[in-house]
Image 1 (cartoon, rainbow, N blue to C red):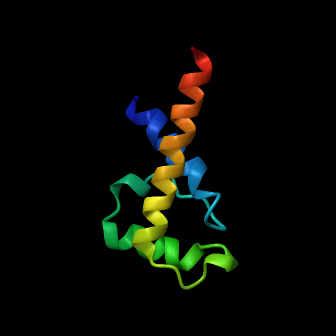
Image 2 (cartoon, rainbow, N blue to C red):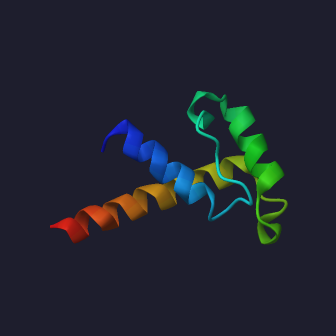
Length: 74
């Protein structure tokens, strides 16, 4: 997968857990900054969730969706 596609997938997936999408430069942030952004912008039902867990779930969703798309193309 290209890095640009992966980045777009992660930005898209962030909208499923956060009230605000990751910005274009999220991939230049430190882990702490990314986790804090997730904690600050998570959807109400996810309030109090650990930022590291939110980041992991966002990346998992991005990966899963890309895998699904790739299978559908075959």
